[in-house]
Length: 335
Image 1 (cartoon, rainbow, N blue to C red):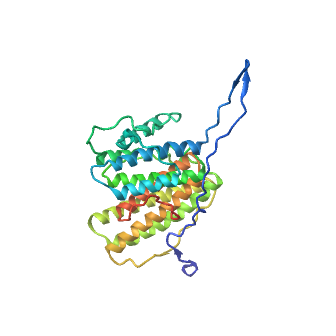
Image 2 (spheres, rainbow, N blue to C red; image 1 turned 135 degrees about the horizontal axis):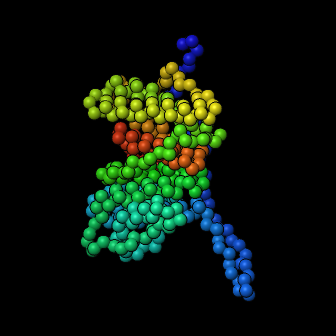
Image 3 (tube, rainbow, N blue to C red; image 1 turned 30 degrees about the vertical axis):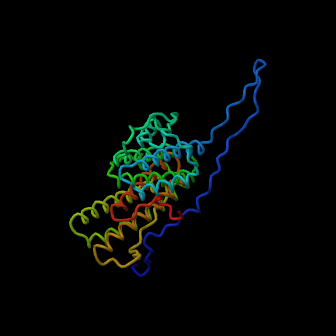
């Protein structure tokens, strides 16, 4: 039986096609006549257009905060600017208040969206700080956390391709918030046991299961080469991935499908012989896992989409903790 087992390539996972460029368009309608008066029909608002405008405006407010920062962070600002460009929203016309805007406006916007799905988040700072006052790193971290919330709140209504992009943008914002010393609230996953996956979501579950199986194997290899704090972290992450693997297995089984079996062994992408290469493998495991969950965001809807986005963000933060370089687009290797 051992002879029949084939070694699988570690972390092999098919990626969806390149992200489609979304073109926002409003619908126009002929006016209606009532009591002799012409009353134009309301123009339908495309959810993608609304999300792009809202989140894009929040990004530009946050960029203004970086420009006014007490401690320049060109590296982080560059990542945010790349995300704004990918979202396709032009910069607003500068005004004196916008130039000195506080990124706390982004957090306020996120709170408004979370409180009510019909709320329109303000993209303009409500006021400017006193002359000479610079934006603190704590304020920037709060703004990045607010951007995470804005992206999460928009996920249920936007198109699949835009959902994938927004989930990645939120994960990148979470990385920046962490680098700034901020603390993100722990999200509450919807719970896989309550999901009833569609055919596309079931396929995404199988892909996620395969990636988690490979990740569990990889952590089993690298953990033995670490000591102290890193070993404790590896043990914690190993247990987390085992639990996620088992949860995915249960969802697939409850849907009436057969979970893909794990391989007996996996080929490592490079030799792992010491603590340095072990940490590098852990970072790569999480980077590759983020890509799988980004695809799951695009494949799913509603609670499934939200759960995949949470997993994408968590993988991006774990990769950062293992020494991976921060990226504006975690889980999107094509960018």
